[in-house]
Figure 1 (cartoon, rainbow, N blue to C red):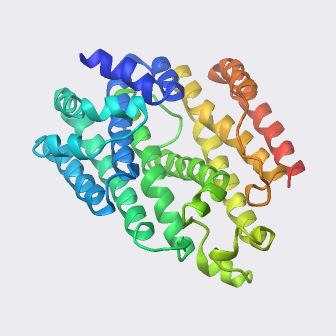
Figure 2 (figure 1 turned 120 degrees about the vertical axis):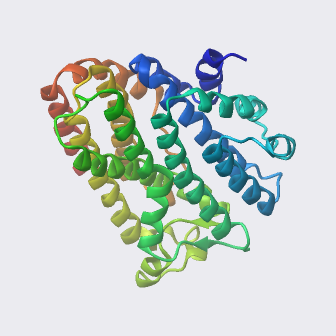
Figure 3 (figure 1 turned 180 degrees about the vertical axis):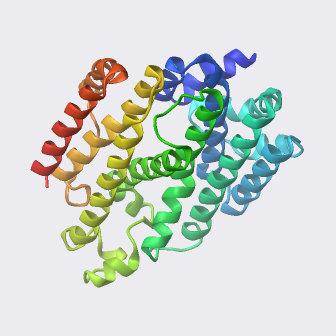
Amino acid sequence: MKTADLGGPLLASVSRSFYLTIRILPRNLRAPIGLAYLLARASDTIADTADAPAAVRLKYLADFDTMIRTGMSAGIAGLQRDIRPTAPGEVRLIAVLDRCLAWLETLPESDRREIAAVMEKIIRGQTLDLQRFEKSEGITALQTAAELDEYTYLVAGCVGEFWTRICLQHLPRYATIDAAELARLGANYGKGLQLVNILRDAPADLRDGRCYLPADELRAAGIDPASLLRKPAAARPVFDRWKQRAHEHLRDGFRYLHALRPARLRVGCFLPWFLGQETLRLIGERPPLESTEKIKVPRSTVRRALLLALPVAFSNRALDALATSAGKNSAASR
């Protein structure tokens, strides 16, 4: 399989939506960002392959981190033997993971350094997740807001920082604000998108024994994690507090997008922001813990996002109008 196939068909097989984002990026950004996504998806596959015991997955997460940082793929055959996902795209990804690591070695040193740094954080977040949730029976919850904030940073906030740094390296006129502030906004943007996913997926996570809402906040509201599925309305104050935090982080995502110059990058950053806003609106209308209907943005909304992306690519006025509309819709759903 050639590098072009790794960055094209393979990427499309594990994420068609992100593949579209990659296609619209400037050519010099497609390799580092596309490869970073494939490596992150591979570590996620390692962490989530339930057929392998938790101890085995933890071992291979640590090994994979070492492979990325050192450029040495010793142990890859064992990983490919023992990590056996079921999704076809993930099966192909694990099968060619050695070639993804070889591709990494062909990138400029600055890109390799950034990819290794972000992957170290992502794998740290995935490792913490396994350690916290895989050894207990019943429902286990994160204990504090600090743990939830740490988790959202490690698996998503650091990606916003990575995206910012890699774009600034390749596109010096990437944004109208300084790098430090842009990285802060990017980190919050990533954390906001992850919070949206956590809130949307709360019922499924609870059925799997995972509660990301902090236990100390639930106790203060008079409910324990084990009772959430039976008495979900009691958790509404905690749920709404984190929904508001997601709104605040997505507002930083709006500021991030507002500061970008390249049209293609504006489109790439707009799509997840718009879909995140729409998902939060649906969450406000049908709180997941209190509804039997799974929250999912319809395809018509995705098509609308693609149409709206064109004016947003070239105009902050169009972006401002959308943000105003999103704000009104969000307020109406509360």
